[in-house]
Amino acid sequence: MTFTDFNLHPAIQESVAHQGYEKPSPIQEAMIPVLMSGRDAIGQARTGTGKTAAFALPMLHRIAQTDERRFIQALVLAPTRELATQVSAAIYTYGKNIDVRTLPITGGQPYPKQIKRLRQGVDVVVATPGRLVDLLNQGAVDLSQAHTVVIDEADEMFSMGFADDLDAIFDHLPADRQTALLSATMAPGVKKLAQKRLNNPEVISVTDGDRTASDVAQKGYMVYHRDKLAALVRLIETEDVTSALAFVKTRAGAAEVASLLSDLG
Ligand code: AMP
Image (cartoon, rainbow, N blue to C red; front, side, top):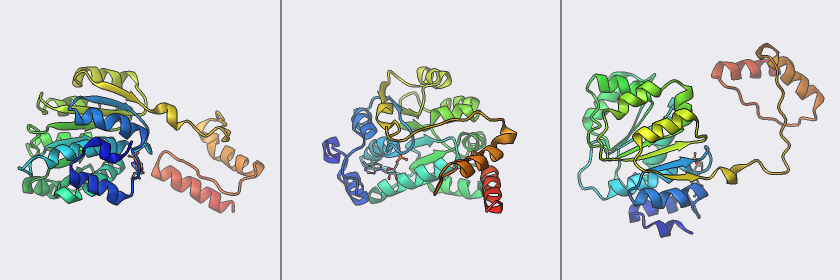
């Protein structure tokens, strides 16, 4: 299968070619035709699978066919500022040829600037739930004409406590819309949201293909939080580590680990 098989708008096709993507990834292969058909969809896929393009390309295809612009046609909800910024940048890139205006709406940014951009008119909003609810309450965002809605990393939405915000946002959306939900896991909260807000969705799962390669050994150690750093240091001392990546939950935690390791030489 190639990207030409999807019958995407030529301008969107062109941006995909420009990105150098040769072949659709499994989630793209499964999800793009479903979304192009107008159906709701649930995609179980992790970051790195190409899930952003899987929902963004059909969304842009639909926008490309509209003459009128500068009202919110599509909304993407993302759990973190980082993801919202990344998704917004991807949509901007894929939509460059069709003059799409994309606005990330996230916390930590000044309100006046976001409100000004909204007044000037945007086509796609990529938002974290909390800030979007604030702006909805201020009457600064009009979602009544959004024909496409995407909830990205839905499981993270719930672990970050956005359930009520999501409910509030959905109450502002038109009933006649296409909704897509992406999630790494189908946790109970995600299932419930899908049941309540999606209309007869096609369920697509591509989790089989992204298992760790068979020649990679995985080990887990259960340690108390206070012992974690000591355990990490012990591991580095005893294992034959020449290079390593350490994933840490928070920015402060990353700084702490980096500083300790560097202090220990
Ligand atoms: P995502 O899972 O959406 O975060 O995408 C992961 C990365 O894969 C991004 O850097 C994309 O630019 C890239 N990507 C998405 N689709 C394709 C494709 N069909 N071929 C090659 N790279 C891709």
